[in-house]
Image 1: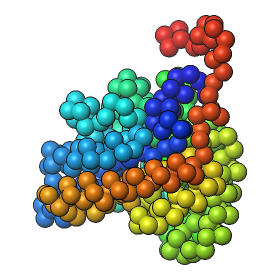
Image 2: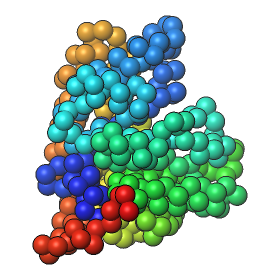
Image 3: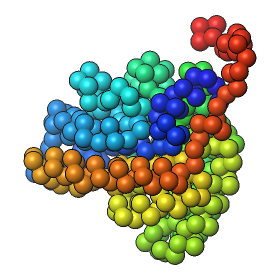
Image 4: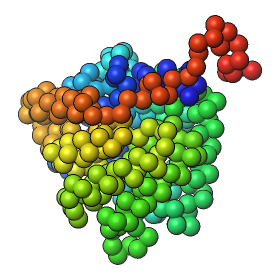
Length: 324
């Protein structure tokens, strides 16, 4: 962990060293859902207003915000929706949720890059990676990750890698056993490769089994596979009650917190006007507070174990210069 990455990491965590990150980087799928419920296509302005409304209500209750450059970061920075004391993460990928995960290419947002995230004061780079270790596309996707690890190393900014797996059989979804096995394999592979933070789906399908012993065993296996690499839990659109249960088990197993999106604010998509604002200011804020409390009690702290050794007064002399 370099001094620069450590500084960015500290800005995205609580003072105690855990994550409660608000995720609102959703684009095409969220825009479609909002348009469907509004009864007409949303304009860029209206989509931006929705995102900034969510950010304004919830960002101050988290440790960082994950949002996109087009509708989240620009206006968020210039109009003060993104709190100055809150970390900022940004995605690199274009999302194609209308395609099966196996058919999605790793397409990066045109005109956006690791370097630009660093220049605007971002604290983390996020890549969502559809991935199956046995798919023919796997090596090409690993090459993308290696390149981004190198770019983030040069820019001295953490890479938050979000590998999402899928079934190779188009006629069925992964079983819970398969999901656990592949999540463990991905955690082992990408932590060894050098991803700074892993953003992982819960390694058991809650629709298939709610056995808590199975959940704990799967999370413990994921944590062991991560080694020294910190990992966080994503919400994947499950209900909030389910996500709290998953968060507690993941954190007790070694996760360092959550990056939470739809489980916190999803109902705001359906609501309009004052009803949306009331929901965000009450129920959604309460959910962020609950997640913070669960993580405060149970999440693994990462700042102490990742701190670079800067005890020598001349540490900066051997620190790589950005311009050399």
